[in-house]
Amino acid sequence: MPSASNYPAPRLDSRPVETFTATLGDLAARLDAAVPAAAGTRFTGVALATDQVRPGDLFLGIRGAKAHGARFAAKAVEAGATAVLTDAEGAALVPEDVPTVVVDDPRRSAGPASAFLYRDPAASMTSIGITGTQGKTTTAFYVAAAAGLQRSGTIGSIGTTVGDDFFPPVLTTPEAPELQAMFAVMREQQLSTVAVEASSHALVLGRVDGFAFDAGVFLNLGHDHRDYHPTQADYFAAKALLLTPEHAKVGIVDIDSHWGRVLAEQASVPVRTVSASGSTAADWRAEQVELRAHGSSFVIRSPRGERVPFSTQLTGAFNVNNILAAVAALVESGRELADLAPGIAALPSVEGRLQRFDFGQPFTAIVDSAHKPEAINAALRAIRTTSPEGRLIAVLGANGNRDAAKRRMMGRFAAMLADVLVITDDNPYDDDPAEIRATLIDGARSSSAEIVEIGDRREAMAAAVRMARPEDTVVILGKGHERYHALAGGEIAWYDPDVLREVIEAR
Image 1: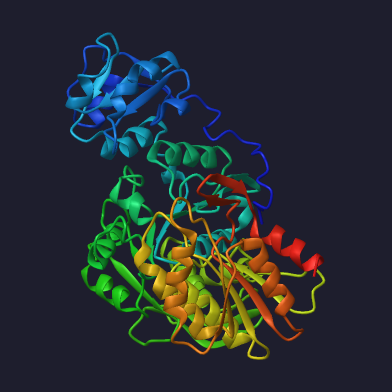
Image 2: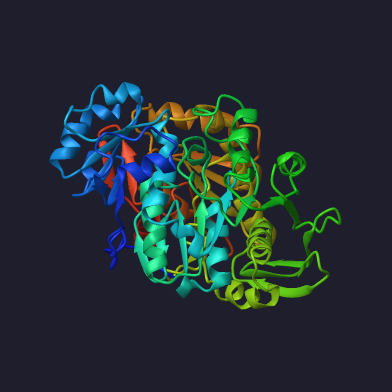
């Protein structure tokens, strides 16, 4: 499996080798916009930011939170852009001699324009879009593993994989021009499958516009992004956009949760339901589930009555849900169920997702990216269920500058399952770290867990390691695959597995 452990430089460009060309006149016709005077002007790429412009690009002038992107059109032209796509407000900001296509909403046109230039690259492979508060990354890798890692791609929060190649992450779901360009790269590499994490932001902001996934997967809905989505209903509505005809041909919905059952009833595309709890109301279900500390086994039953044994090296009941959704999506997109089991069994781990490390220590050491209440609950419950002996020692912090409402719940859920909870810092940014820690501790107080507060993250991890006895489990929560620690003075290089190794070796 491609590894992001040290962010290797990609062997491929993030745009295709083949040069694609389109004219503004053809683009205007595709977008149902007025044909500009310079209709014959050609462009060979699409860019949303001036630092991404390459010679021959179409520059997208989109209104931002602080300024209209069209203000930077002249700079984009200096960098090599041949034309601009913007709205009427933006057109007034573009130099008069720069060819311009005017549309009502350039952000919503970014996907269709990019897909048009690259000749609809997603149509050349099976594309699976995945949304949910947690599980998107793991499910994407299960899709790729089941379909064959060498001929599959993933796009998500830990980066983009193209077979064996890897591109570091920028956004969970890239902006539409980068997404479509990467699809074109995957087409050149003759990949057969791509799995894309479709965040709520991406769905609302049109990053996955311009094509429809062969299958759209809805996993779950927890508490997150309330700084962007005012209410849980708003958050759900954003996620539900994936299961509309504009974005997916068929929906795969996990009905082991309330929001999944709601979406299964109201989705505007054909829906296949899944249940890892074995609900007979589901089209796809898991049976004979056996959870172990180092993996799980179960039988998947299809709507056609097929029953195929599956196994995974990843632990936790939620991973049974993730596998079931991944498998259902692939089969509903044309794959054979029995062909998918070997790839699932062969996947050793997903970076930062209940990832176990052996640095010679006598206890179990795990790194997990859980930083939302439900994800913390699921991760710790999986560890507690499959490793009942010994204490569970958890290290937890919470991000600053966002969604402060979830911090108390994070502390509460962690303390419900941990024997020892070490509260520390995790990307406080400009917020007061002590205040963040106090809120986490306040949420944890009602439990019987031993609570320790150590602001310095390295010292917190070292303290957890020193406490651990041979039968114990130490889990470092929050960062997972991240390579930075964001403080008030800026970001510093940081990778939890590296720091964990260092404090274990110094124990």
